[in-house]
Image (cartoon, rainbow, N blue to C red):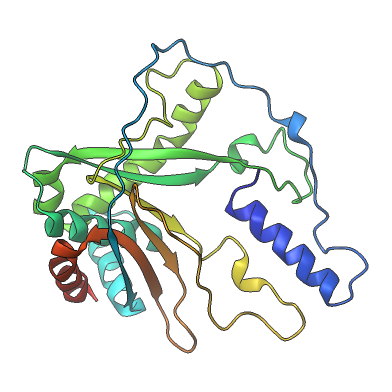
Length: 263
């Protein structure tokens, strides 16, 4: 069991040995006992999830660095704060998808993403950077379709940032068994959307002996929840490439139009 960082570390280790290195640059560390077992919250059991498979359409779009920086600068000018590329891209795609699928304004839409918790466990994990286990916590935002569709990108970036700020508190409560809701209980419906960032987990540094990868394409065939994976565009392009599997055919044209208006 590993998360994105752990999986990339494993692949990099295999690549280094393939190049002839006697040992990996970063020695893998098992050390599962370093993380204390969490205390399960005494929550009433819910019904089993109803899984509906959606015939999502694949789409790929590139967002330029200029576009991303424009939104970053706008956010800073309006709030006096800074935001990340992930914040901007997540806000852009979530709003575009919400507008395209056209749910009723009162209908809830859900955004999910995994947050790394290694920095919260730094006093427990080995000082060496070799721990490759699963070390993420699911973060989520729920808002009405009308709110997300009608909000500015600056406002939605703010929602993403506020959710990220809650990570230490939510993770601590979950570890102590004090959480009021199950963070892993995700609504499996068309209003749910998840974003994953593969830019900085380590896959782009994998070198089997003929250099770093020119292009990276993850396998994604999720049919239960709409998803977007953030990648790097092929060189020399700058910005991000979005691999999206998140809308059905009847909403594909509207979604692509929303994305093109942003790009």
